[in-house]
Image (cartoon, rainbow, N blue to C red; front, side, top):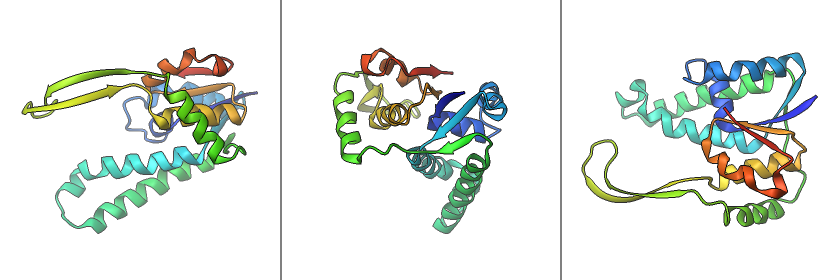
Length: 184
């Protein structure tokens, strides 16, 4: 039995059948259903799902057409309950967090984040409307990525499964080399 940590991007794609990457999650989900894998989900992933829904839902045509914030709250709440309900009801999936003190986990996150560098691009035009502006775009792991890695390690996972390519930067850290990071 292999313990696999299911990172937020994987969970969203797995639970939202309309997602462009949903089909890529099916082999992993089948291994979980069959018992070859045990999926591990942290409370941190649930928090990120809620954050993602809060950011994406305002772009939904149902929400854009109304200024009523209650519509936004209702849609986010419904979608969150739907997605998290599917996760909780999934066979061979456990909700598990590290028993390590949160202070120790956050300190480890900060230490790991310092040497894990991504790339910085200077943008002089808006990528959407192409108007002039100055912006630095960081492409690399952030504190949430590192936090998922640490939680996966602390709960004894064998693999971390994600769609987030920022994890490629984290694969070379010797202290976590026993944890296979699979970017689908």
